[in-house]
Image (cartoon, rainbow, N blue to C red; front, side):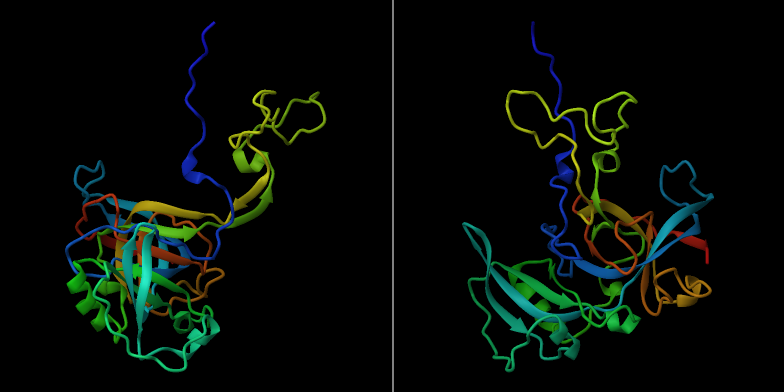
Length: 316
């Protein structure tokens, strides 16, 4: 009797289901572009509301009508450059060979890293093949916390243009309007809400076992066959649930604004408070809890931008 063919079950995209190493995501791939610009930004999640928007998306069934969209509010204080990093391509990947620090650093950085007492001016290496910008956030301006978050952002263009553009960035703040535009699609990287240690019923959605089944009710039926005598990773078992690194592709930016009266509710957002500066409205939900750092990058799947949508009303 022939063996029945069955495709493997379960998505390896969500494997392994383990806790993230830190509370904000690490971006592992960036788009390659000829235009010289910063390819990412970040902000802190405020909460969700809904907005009434005039739909102007081509080929949409509701084109020209007013539609209610769920939106996520993300506050985006300006980013400050920490250093310019120079990398060299090796058989083992990119290797950091030099770093030039900014001369204007906030004292709050000492809460996160140990700063050198003297900044020695270094020459730009000639054999550098890539440049990244190391930036830090300013959560103190929106009264979330005092310790900044530090991460890398890629720069588009060729190596010579990147060096000149990176030198200009070291002395200035980077604002959200300088990087992203309304009607643009972005990829969102964040850490999901943590659920702790959970069993297979909640973790994988298994059904409860029958009334007269042996021993346990909230567990899987068995761990697999006798041979091969091992437990496959595809068997649903208990373990960590939530607090995973996740990426959502092609999220639409509905608005980039600093008019806080349009979004602030009476008494502020639950568990966050009032929005105090620049903010972004993202269509739909975004993974992560309130106050968590959300990173935006240029879409890696080449989604074309839309015309800015007309927002008629934002719920408070």
